[in-house]
Image 1 (cartoon, rainbow, N blue to C red):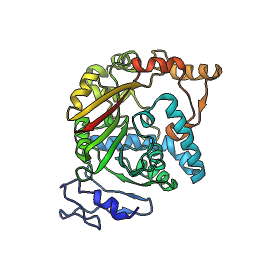
Image 2: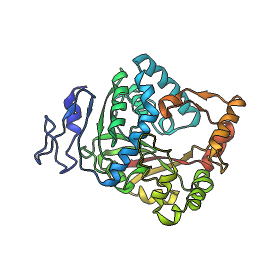
Image 3: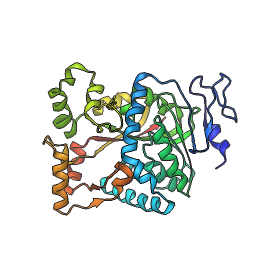
Image 4: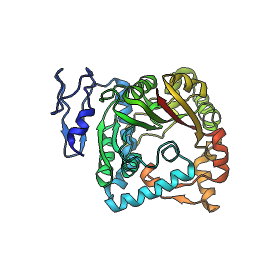
Length: 343
């Protein structure tokens, strides 16, 4: 894919003017292409909250993806993506239900690419794929994987989802899996999704569910017990509890939001053909001390298959969801799978 194809999509996130062919703007901003890392690394001025987002998710990137990235080859990545496809199909994940199986010729934006497994999957399906993440480490991890996939075309940029560096109406599909609820302003992110979609384009999003076993039986009781439910805004209180702990620094997850169906309809009011579906219930969402370790060990002893897809997704192998978990997911699941059109 010629580099000028990507350049035509870009605009300055500061002043909203199209960038020149050399990726400079009339306002004086310069966005150099970092050839050594294969990613455009702009340096926007970030709030303290967004700097904390970068620090926390950069820490998790090192925890989850570094070891696997170090041994990736084209063949190894292709094998891992096969396992990811099977894993997603089994758990009826957003990438295999709401996303088309054939993305040939589609211009797709992924917001919050993480380690790049989803982006690589979509590029392999034939997409012209643009992946963005606010965290430099995750941009580099994504760029590595995109470079190893021969099908389609793809590039990874560092960007703030609240001020995307793309011209209006650029994308056929905007995809984001479990990311926008971790931003400073999910509302501004959704507005940006709507802006960069083409008329008739589709948003495919996953946001966390308020009415879920994970929230009512696990997160909220812990927030009450540790006192943050009374001393912090809800998004910050939930953030302290979810997504793991830092290993290389001290910054905790700044924000996590949860939504009811009513709240989602309000959040996505600019869109049409809104469809909501729940999944992602695990037995370890039940309020049992050290439940994750206990249920994981029990399920393995019972012969529940362990999916190697976990290595590229979470940095470790994970058990597949059981029939019971899959049956309860539409009612108790933590993930809202969302599909909506820009009218």
